[in-house]
Image 1 (cartoon, rainbow, N blue to C red):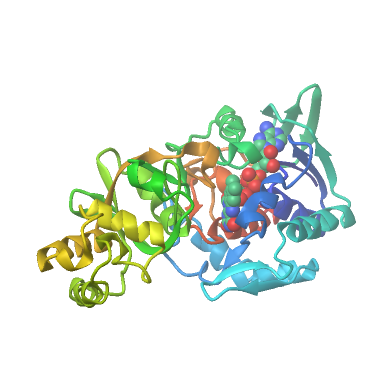
Image 2 (image 1 turned 60 degrees about the vertical axis):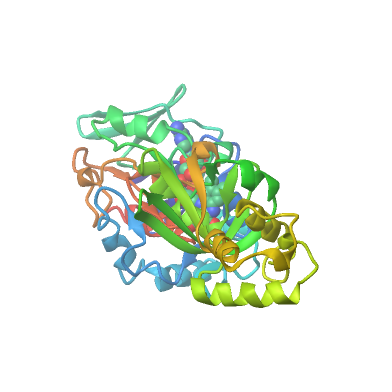
Length: 402
Ligand SMILES: Cc1cc2nc3c(=O)[nH]c(=O)nc-3n(C[C@H](O)[C@H](O)[C@H](O)COP(=O)(O)OP(=O)(O)OC[C@H]3O[C@@H](n4cnc5c(N)ncnc54)[C@H](O)[C@@H]3O)c2cc1C
């Protein structure tokens, strides 16, 4: 059987290796000059390739959040089977306490090399710099069109990814190609992305990292919450805890607030006790030194300033003043302007409608012989290796050509 795969990213390479391992003739078409360009950028160059929790429910989203269950739950495609598969390709992995899985080398390049060597070893016909412009169906035969070239195939796997990460290859092609075959997509929005907020405080804290609980609120309703590392930027906030809640901002509409708690493990009373003790110990110093030793110096100063205190002496602060600082520590509110958009986003929320594909095979319910996998489908995972795990599992399932 001749199999044509559109897209040499994570899911396309996984599909190609699987199909070629089963004896099929495989042609892999990639519009960029090299395969796996986005993969090299993942995990800050370390490639967070999976997560030990990826088999457990609740980490994937879309109109049908259960669509991914079959591929991710199959004993030969789940997380441990994926790690075995990588080991069979010569790539060893290591897990962090958080469950995030990385190549043992800590280099995304190792993951790409293992995949590239497997493609070569299996004789996959990899054609780079080759942009697919159309897929035709006539008399049950599929033809993939790439510029002047037409390639007839018994099966076509669409692995063209999503709109996120424009600088490393995110494009709209996959949705357009599937649409020409009669498929539909849901609304698209950026996920796993930095937030833009009122920049007043973030700008003065640019580059400062903190541990915090991050909540996205509409009025008093919590839309999403995460605890972890936060990074202040010129335009707002970034970091893993922010990535986790960014989908709620993309889909949550206007008027949202990002509320930060810089001491989530303490309650208001414990924080007030600490501040009372610091007020006594810091007599003679400025109020803005009160949080020294607790937070990054600049963050401590900004929290005091946001509470209305700077130059006055620490010992002049009343208990009511300290309660205002406690509020700022636990409920520091940044009005949300939006996300940083598809170019900065790691993932696309939304995609090809999953009710038009069979979750047990990834085959189209509309066009026999046409398959889709990875991010082009309406499946997006949490930050932390979940999206690549979906790419490996769905890509390999599509490559089985069931
Ligand atoms: C900066 C960044 C960091 C990330 N870090 C992580 C991480 O650490 N962990 C994690 O789990 N996820 C991460 N992600 C998300 C993850 O990379 C994607 O979800 C995953 O790569 C999707 O795989 P895919 O095969 O569906 O698409 P892609 O990997 O995007 O591959 C699609 C390929 O198709 C090609 N293509 C598109 N159109 C055509 C066409 N018309 N003709 C031919 N080829 C075409 C593209 O050039 C591309 O190479 C990150 C994303 C970004 C942008």
